[in-house]
Length: 483
Image 1: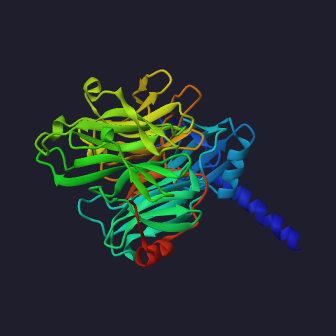
Image 2: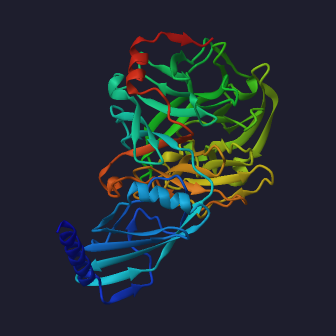
Image 3: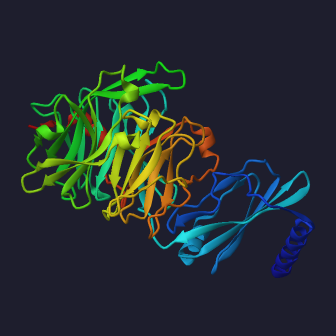
């Protein structure tokens, strides 16, 4: 008897479903108005579901997903949220294939089917974790800052540091060595702060100013060995702009380069990359650790000459045995020839490419709407303008995946105010694909979350420490002085 009732109910559902299916569907040539824009993109096979919503407020939505080996249909109202298990199975089975997506909507009693779009599933995975600084995009708001870590394969997020637990102090620049969780650091300011160095989950608090230095470490990167770090020491001045079209300008009145030896607690520099005549900043090691790329500009009277301040891309050797800079500086890209200012150079782990920002002038591209990304081929010397990647508002701080196949960057393309992490695939020829934003479980997340995702960095694994460990380090750890 129970089986008979079950089959009757099932038959009724099938009949009702058939009655609700549209008899006439009007085809529309254009792309569906989905947000985020996930149309015609390349994605890693381990990315979280690309949930989206329809901006034209339909009554019903049907999304057909068809791969070479797997297909299914998802239903919703304004929002489409893919079941995570089905999504993982889909991407795993479609590595290297194209997935065709068709969106059909009901609006005002009529049905419309938009042109299909594709997701190309790359055979190259992306590093599983992304860290970023969550911060309100204001001028003087420092009381709500978190450094968070997101699992890119799902929607879980972990707070690594929260400045509500550390006297409201500023915190920034979370970086990894070789995309590994075992060696990382970030700067925690405030009267009891310092540079928090993580080695295998054990935290140290360092005073990176050094005896003969004028400022602590700011921008920098690890040497592949993990023993050394190259950093700039900056005196940073933020000021409101005199130009109506600009909001805020941030510039250095002094900046030099230093090498930090984390084993010996020592600070080393060279007269070639320090002194009053030149401003040096944004240093990074090349993939093999034998040289340092950085940005440099001649010292000018500031802020009066701010629009004439342009940085060139430079290189200097590094000797791992002595822990010192080399004896010669090379100019890789001249600001005079570019007629733009270079910032944030990042070398791909395979040593092939160098990604950097360009803006009209200055050293703080986040506040420059004209900021774009560029990619230098270190073998050929050619510079790619990355037209397919850049948008109409600031595209700035960026990092590479461990396999040099993916890049992530912070973009304000949606509204010019809030920075969000966008990903782009780099193919065998060094060609970048159309970017897509970090997916969220609720596709309306970016509409109601008024926060910027600053300084996105990829890592293979999640770090073991958390906000409570950082709080304990801030208040209780002794400070190791760099000499």
